[in-house]
Image (cartoon, rainbow, N blue to C red; front, top):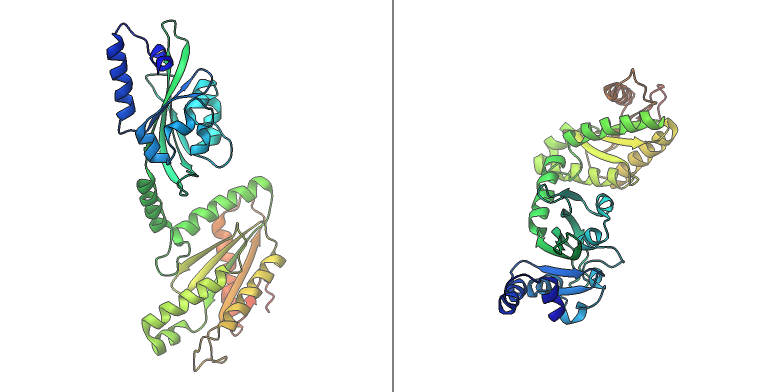
Length: 328
């Protein structure tokens, strides 16, 4: 405690200094302090509650990172202490410099919280403590648990980008993603493929099984389509009984293979649709591929895939049609 008091030495009496340190200890805001060598000087009770780690386990050590992460990495206080503010962007979701103090940092990030076994989203502030000559002698870090607020934000974002019935991306998300993938394909000079998938005779299915039955049918088909995707592909509910699949860096031949897998998987669901030729639910798929150029636009790829889908329907349904007019 004497070492800590020395760092915060002021014209106040020793009794007043002790009161200030006791106040920091009892703050409801989780707070810890590092000395000039990165050792923990203060680990208050709120910090114990937040991390599940008692002060006696970390005081005098440089092991405070273990309270927040599974792997070694600096806390925001370490970055301030080491003058590594340029590294904040690589380590945190968001960050700012406090306008009133260029040496202080504010950031937010998910932390592992190994002792508690659950991740928490923390807002962190780190500020230097300087001596009379302006030299840093310690750094104070305070933390706020924003996990519930972050989860609510994520839920709202999902509502804005996800289809409520199928859980797939919605039309808005599809439009945004297609534009982004088009720009990336343009920069990297890579092909971009698109599948338009439509449920055959869906009106007849709805008439026979009702809207609840139709909803269940769409959910099962959505799951079947999504199961054939790579990590960087996107499946969206384009509208009604139509789905769209964005396939980055995929040739037309590769897109045709994916389309055929989707067609077969839906066929194997064996969802009964009496009165149709196959007696169960099938899909028709139009496939198109483009090599984006400055003078072209994503809407052209959509129009081409739509035209291919129309051909698949016209040729008898339960088949795929490619940009070049070939069917299977």
